[in-house]
Length: 387
Image 1 (cartoon, rainbow, N blue to C red):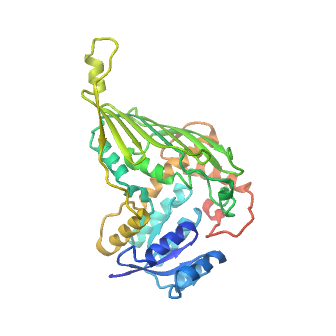
Image 2: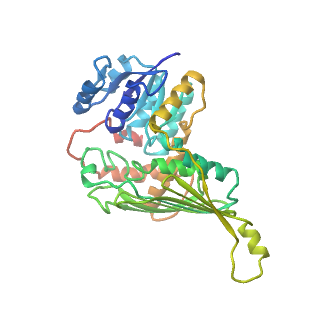
Image 3: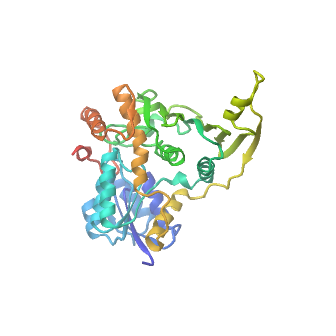
């Protein structure tokens, strides 16, 4: 296959970016072959910006049945990701899904089962994996440069959102339309990076605050405590109600400390491990000597989303390994599902998450979720998520 014909279903904010990347040739060996959205304003945008040679569809049935496709990018609201991805696999298409892979791990497992059955290439748009700073952190952790990890703190609150943002779409910030708030919309990239760099914890205790800073149903402020089998602990803090906000990752290990902020890494490296110093030092007050160094990292890619799309296309055409395959969508949702369930049940939640318990608790909130006014972008049918 020399050129992959890619359709984009859902041309809201992110779908437009992906469509333009394909249309403008930022992804080699791929072309934009069709787009689809139920929103009339989105279709009008497509007519004005994508040219007359790209077919525009108003519904998924016609899109999958009539569009000239080899592959599809699913860029719709969260609940619809598994359903549309499965339909793509059943049509013999390769699939790339925007984050998050879905709302619950149960549906994402079904999506991965469909991908495996189809034999097609399945990727998730976890584009922050393309950042050299996080690639370097992962390498430092996995190589043992920090020794055994003791503590991980990540405060990521730099994505302030106003009330007008939440009011901009009928699906936003409702249990029925979105399935969650900051954990499902803004933080999936960081939750993916967390498990990618450090693995999954054994259990989670989280405190989610719903509509703390906005008039919304879902969480806009979260603090979670994570425990690992061998003693490592972590704290993850995220919010859309702080300005200017922070993005600071701090990792303490037996051999020193990493601080990651503003795309820079500082390493306070101990000359002797803390455990060894603790055993051998006899002077009372004192601490191990440390050397501070800045870890060099390359600049971030100019088009991080296009890097993931290119990797997906290369996997289709060349067999290149994926940067983020479909199974990774399950792992990041393990964290957000555990945080939600912990907050709902007011207690510790083990990982893997009890998928049925999560579905029951989410269904309670969907049942009382309010309908918002406005024309929605994408495809929403929360009822199918609980079958």
